[in-house]
Image 1 (cartoon, rainbow, N blue to C red):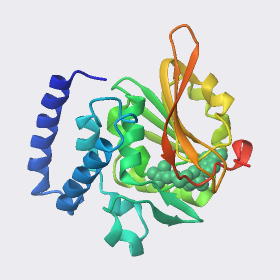
Image 2 (image 1 turned 90 degrees about the vertical axis):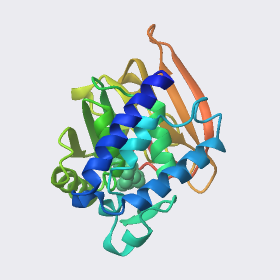
Image 3 (image 1 turned 90 degrees about the horizontal axis):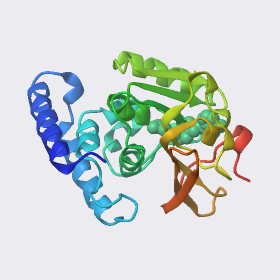
Image 4 (image 1 turned 45 degrees about the vertical axis):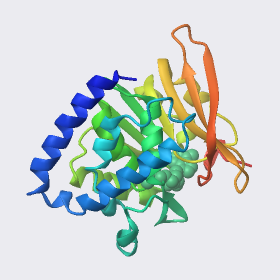
Length: 250
Ligand code: SAH
């Protein structure tokens, strides 16, 4: 984690730029609702101290979420509810994750400006958009072609230029671009996918929900140390849609 003072300075800078943008750019509409969502995320984080590792969610991650227009990532009929702290349907039986979980997962991989990050389960593209300013490059894989294509078009339109989406089975990762400094899996697997562990860089971190569908799943943090050894930690109970394909939860 970055030192607190540096985070505060960064937050001040980001907030200052947000304040300037908010008077002009249309993407900033509903900024007040996003600000309220950030307060909800912070209080949720306070109630899950062991998951957020001491200091709470990185202020830089919260500053990003104060800017990303979540309402543009959900279907028209869900737009009114876009800033509540809950998952919402995005079609094909899938959901956009709850904002607190998006914040937590982004915080936990602790990516930096030079890093390559892999996301499994593009869905709406929202988590990829939130990851975008915290990495050099975000690679995201979606198994449902229509969702993947729609998310790719949306991310391009909103100018998240460092995000690349492909349609495929994310259980097997994206070997051409490995290793990844951070991996975020946004669907629940029955086990931690070995190909993803393999594609994690030394010093890298992966967050992945593990468990059977309709049973309790746990968000797991997987770390690969510099010597290549793996540590895993169970963080908190979560409810994700199942990972399909090679890693489907049985
Ligand atoms: N991160 C998304 C939410 C994802 S919901 C967002 O921000 O909106 C989980 C997504 O994982 C769904 O879109 C589902 O189709 C996708 N998925 C399930 N199994 C997958 C697999 N094996 N590979 C890639 N994507 C998968």
